[in-house]
Image 1 (spheres, helix red, strand yellow):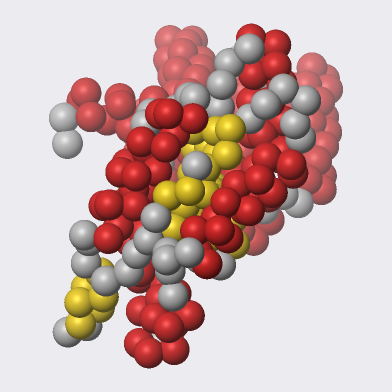
Image 2 (image 1 turned 180 degrees about the horizontal axis):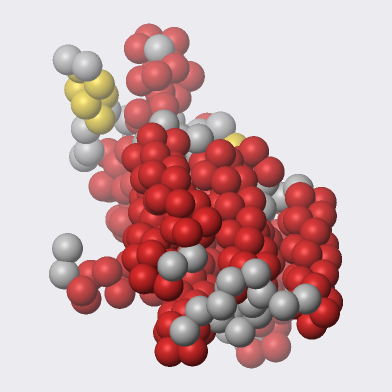
Amino acid sequence: MNKKNIFNRIENGTFVVGNKLKYMTVSLAVALGHLVFLILFYISGVTPLFIYNIFIVLMYAYSGLYWSRKGKYINVFVFLIVEIMVHSVFATILIGWNPGFMIYTITLIPICFYVSYTLDEIKKDLKVSLYTSFAISVIYMTMIVVTRHCEPMSRINDKVEEVFFYLNNIIALAFLLYFAVLYVLEMRNMQRNLRVENVELEEQANYDKLTHLLNRNSMSKYFNDIIEFSEIEDKNFCILMADIDDFKHVNDTYGHDCGDEVLKKIAAIITNDVRQGDLVFRWGGEEILVLIRADMKVATNVAHRICNHVATSITKYEDKDIRVTITIGVAAFMKGMTADELVKQADVKLYYGKTHGKDQVVA
């Protein structure tokens, strides 16, 4: 995957680091950090911390390679928090405050809140983050008091102490940066998922599931807007009320699945035959209503085009060729009319066409 593609995925919210990779990376990175400490503590002659770090390096390797691969991320998280706290306190008591080991405890607070929103076991359980952060704060302040009144148990070389100080700050910053990047990725992904869910909800609320046309419930908004616009701007618009001829016969003869295919075919034809800016609704059953932003002449031409296209089209269903026709009533909006009055006028013309031969346009 090239860098440009990665940045594009980050921007649109589709790039997400999985928990397995996330916790395996953290475990192995912390293990590497402890390996460096192990060497420095050996050089410094701080035997207790040298021995401790041998054990911890092995534990983090186990954490990364076993717990992370097995999906036991809560184990990795708990071990990470406890171990960093223990190591920070242990190192501070032994060699003092100046090497900067207590800085790791502060980095744990934002990490706790991040993890509480990503791990299923504690997801959105704010108490876990609050209690943990409170405990970390108490330990941090306690160590300030302890180190101000007690001398370190071991003395280390000033140059080694300075190395520890810079190293600990660099590692702590890298640790925070890593989780900050993860947070950004998570937030972008959550925002993208929210947008997708909103689109899906809007589709469910405004669109017919079978034909993907606008549904009857969404009509009031569109009608009210266009009626208001037409009266203010003195613009014409018309509606077509279309009904598939003898649709019941199709359902009775070939089954409702076939009827659904026919309905989807007709919906696609009408959608393709109307002009850009016109709206197509599934009115109910086999009735389809089209809102045309033009005068009666244009609307009638569109209706004839639809009628002819439907009559010459074939719906393939299993091994059968299904042919149907459509009847359309056309009504033009006049100032002062309500949406119901306009629909009723189109419906009256549709009924006339259905009772006088079908497969025609009545305007």
